[in-house]
Image 1: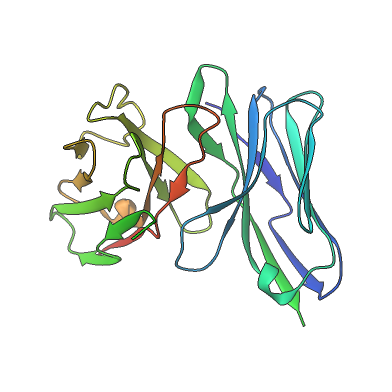
Image 2: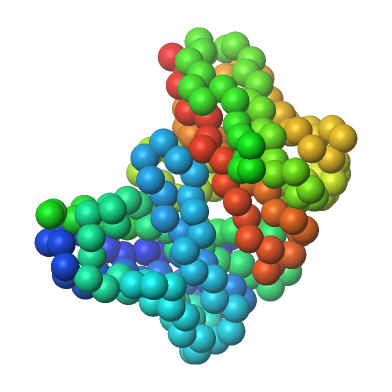
Length: 112
Length: 115
């Protein structure tokens, strides 16, 4: 089955720093999604990408759908303490439009 | 409430017992999904429903797992003869329709611990 390789596994940064994380796959994905999960909660959608090359922003978050359709990155600018959590990439492949494949997550810790 | 709700929030059971996990989707959402999240892992897709129908059950880990949905609303995930490897957080999500552009909204999950 499809697999998403997400990196880094964890990050420790200072408040105000920028953060970047990415996902790669050997398979082509038609949709890339980025979710954030807080402790004891379900994942919450941050950004959805539907076209190769698409660059989308949501406040301090920016994500891009790789031109090869096999990768995506998420950037967080000027991090704040509430950015702490686990960030997951997820993707949908052709013919599996409802089965999200998830990366293993990036644990972000922000030191105030 | 406005979001997806799941119950119980925590379940501790003994190996070999059966458990039922419940999901209440957002009102009006026709599609419902179950995922499993093991410690330090991403989410693993289990099964989806379109209305009351689950066309593809291949994601269920074993024949001890089953799921049903009634009235196009509430869904239950049943695990029979639980094993320790079943310990995980079971997450439910729903979306307005079963399409790639409809956002899946997740519930808070049920944390299952099998002793």
